[in-house]
Image (cartoon, rainbow, N blue to C red; front, side, top):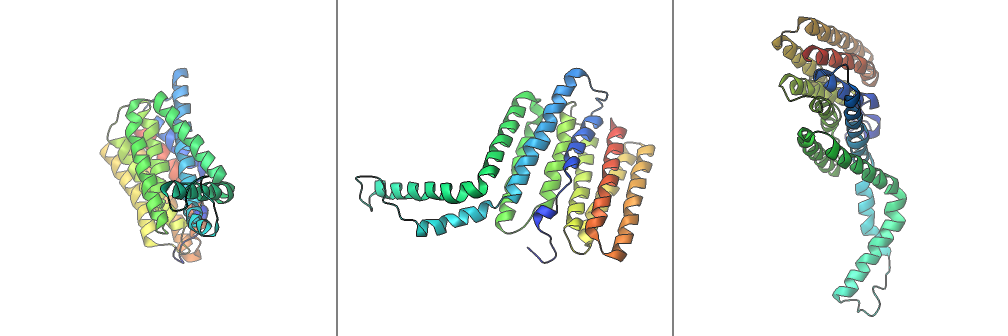
Length: 288
């Protein structure tokens, strides 16, 4: 990790943002106010995105899985196991017995004390995701595949010592928006376009908030995603929404100019989220 980055557990999307993305997706689908039957579907979408995907992402990207696995080799070098009864040490059965002994010892003494709660959390989250697959419409299926792909990329990057702010933004905001939308409506281009726009903006916010100095790349993503959102509003001929998104962007740029003088990127991003969430709601209401 470079000197310009903060620890990953200090640079996270606010918990409410994922839920907000789901509600904006539902709003974009044009199903407000919701009927009683719709509330059940909405509940399971919220569970999927916040407790399912959100928990999996958090545990995969914050727990020290690779550190515990690396300790397995150290443990195997110091452990002494006799193997299975009535087997020679060099035989296949003897080697298998020694491996099982080392593995169970590592699991009991190293893995479970350090990562047992995280592993159980992953199992519970996976069960919630599996239940949602059976209950929610089948058109949400590609979103599960996309989420698995983002998690896989995050694991690869973590193995190399890198973080995945773009993957977090896509998994929490982009897929959250699309899950809320597809649970109640068929796909039409403005909604995934807006999901992409706000994913880019959230990615930029995580980039800026995770640096000791405001970087141009993060600002380009943060502001550029919202400019693209403005373009979508112009294309779908929503002048009031265009003005609303323009005001939200203007408020954020004013914050950025102040931060460039003070040098407090984390504080700027903390005040940026309300503007960004307001822009998401305005855009979603405009295309419903």
